[in-house]
Length: 461
Image (cartoon, rainbow, N blue to C red; front, side, top):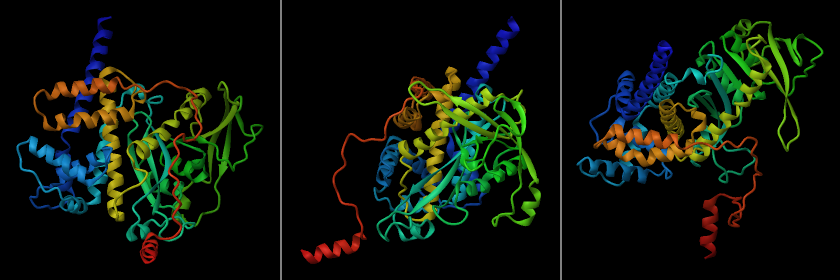
């Protein structure tokens, strides 16, 4: 009895240490920034906008409700005045130049660091049978309508020149346990090798062996399944909508549970002969069908395709529950696009657009890290904590935490306790129509470029 009590105390103490470690890392990002700059051999002069200050302002900028550079400078001046330092000019030119000087690799490395720190804080109770599950999905972003952005990420072909915005397609790899984003890939919206599966292939080698990839039916192709198997990655996804499935065939593992063989198709144009030869001629795939009963809705039937072949170790009910949790990735993408206002990016060059995207994801991971720290301290599940509420709490507590004036530990305890109280309501099956009550102002849609319109109106006047 005493041994069990000691083991329980050790686990709780270990969780609290991980929470404290996570919090301290959030307070000390400048050490990591300086270390990465040294490793990248990035040399910078002794300026007011050092790499650490610039990164901090950039990340706080995307976390703020107002994404403007002007407010970032105002935040920086308030910090300097509180520290007893002189104000800097309110002009944003120096800050914008400092952002452009920083290498893209710095932001990529910072994203990797934040995701690793979140993964290190993972509680074993959050895993699926002791295995880490990654979720993948894609979305689109638009950006400032500049000539450079249009060249790298052209607007949709259906739009007239000057009437649309540059658009890019991207995918993200999120952790099911922590919610942190691990990797991302970016490409133009249209063109060869710009689809979601093509982007996944560019980062598939970065997923560690032994992990499970959770995806929707678009990813359940032979190539994703086979390439994942070669790399030791298992896939759980809805069966592809173009594949005909007959449960009267194959090796029966249970009721509506079968084992079938996928044969290797002809070599696609994007694959080299060497890569094609490394793929096995056939792979074993497990199909299982289950029904979703929800009060007030029609019964739905879902067919899963997975490389988790053992029905005793991975039962149909457990896989169905795992796939149900895939909806978390849709919520994470909504947090990025809506709560963090990533749907439309402001930077006017492709290089800065990519930096802005990475800053959004770094900021997203920092919010997730605060949620993890609170969950570990109060023995909660991070999925039950509000992301929006945490982001708002971080913004309000940021000033006193950055200044480190007085009782810093007590301030962090108050922050984590506040985050723990921001619970997400349990509303299973809640569904609302995509309708707006407030009417938009009745402006006409722009069908010609704005500059000719200005000239025409000036001539008429």
